[in-house]
Length: 128
Image (cartoon, rainbow, N blue to C red; front, top):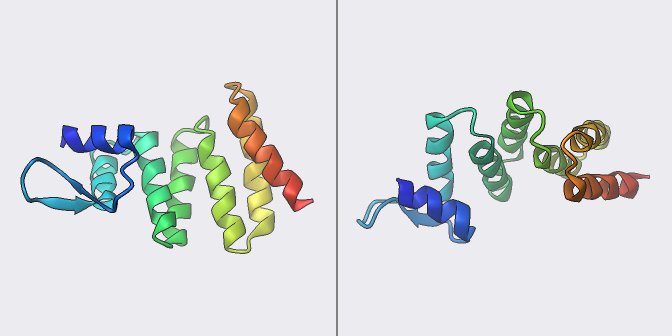
């Protein structure tokens, strides 16, 4: 399992399937991420990665729930605000996206996350 975690985190794991060990047992990236979240529900990175995987699979409602959970558990995990707003926009929930992005701007100010703050600012400006 450790091999899978390292593989996912450091290579970007572009394929939908990843070896969990050197044997024939194959799990999807989503399955692995679900296992990581189950093993440590407070691991913001794993939950965030699961949300992005769900979004990629067009499971927007589930992605929204995971991103909201990241923010609830770790309000300073700034990239979650950007991606939550993006999914909400994709679903036509413009005002909800705007609200999330404004909260993200506040969160980005605290840790000094300028890159994500700039991305959120650009998303907000595109709404106006």
